[in-house]
Image 1 (cartoon, rainbow, N blue to C red):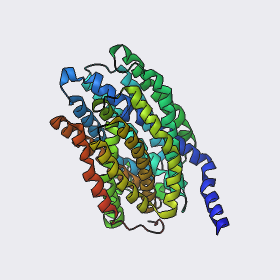
Image 2: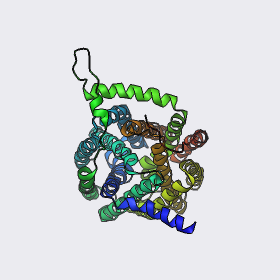
Image 3: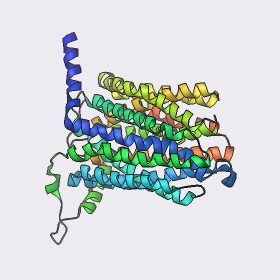
Image 4: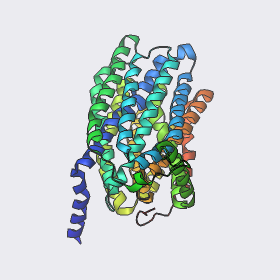
Length: 440
């Protein structure tokens, strides 16, 4: 029995040495830099304190505008993701979509350098575009997981990607840390804005292996394009809409998948609020400096790099659903700790714990979605998975922003996430997990 467990462990590790798996995971290594610097840490604080300062626009107006910016970008991504997924599966062009969307995201990331005090409309427009292309590219990245994994190792490979992603985030934080030493004084904004350029370059360089070595699996879908009445082939766009309609009807009949997507939407609101407002909360409520916040993120990334492997292994051992249930319960405890105790020490501990829980829940969620996804429909079905996360990124941050603006209290706004977490726990308990993926 012991020898058998060793063999199983080796069979899980073996796929990590494949060029395609390493290239796929390196994309996580690359894009986490954008997520940390632009979505979570530097640009949100820069936006709410420099671009939309309190002395000009009033208390928490910048917080509200930041929530709206995030919500609008996610709304656009949600509208486009299912159609992109259907087209990508039809044309077998996930890699092409991944490359183009990432490239455009990087361009808009560079443009953030030109934003400054009072330029709210410009900053919002550039961020909305950058985040839109980032979020849609992530859908194609995630959709490669079912093709790269096999039964028994999907959780481990998913965890490997997350672990490398957090490592990339940690390295980016160490690189930009010296640029944040002068805080948000007017004379130091140049060094802060340089972090946007560094992020774009980092994202581009470490995405290259995925552009070059990730390949779409061959499929007979390309030969199955239907014809219109004149005998001409229907365009990929139109056929994508047709497939989207068919997929939506199939998903409605798959109760477990529909329930999981509902649960994922609910509990993802908590993750969206953490991503969008963690740095802003630390700055506005606890008066942390940018370097203190960066140090907090560095400390948060260390345990996640290791725990991602552990929870990936745990998913394969006890199942995705159990891991999700366990981590969501811990999430509720974290939210209560941060809201009740207005102390830096508690915030540091709670944030580190939240980072571990977030990564673990997402590893389990992506693994469960892989099991629930039929063969050959990866991008198409993962687009609906992306929609769940993106709609939560519309609702969660906007709700937080509205409550914070009208109550002038971000601690009260944070408690709203408990509604989403408890709702997600209840719904995920009703999901029935199949033993193996189906073929359609």
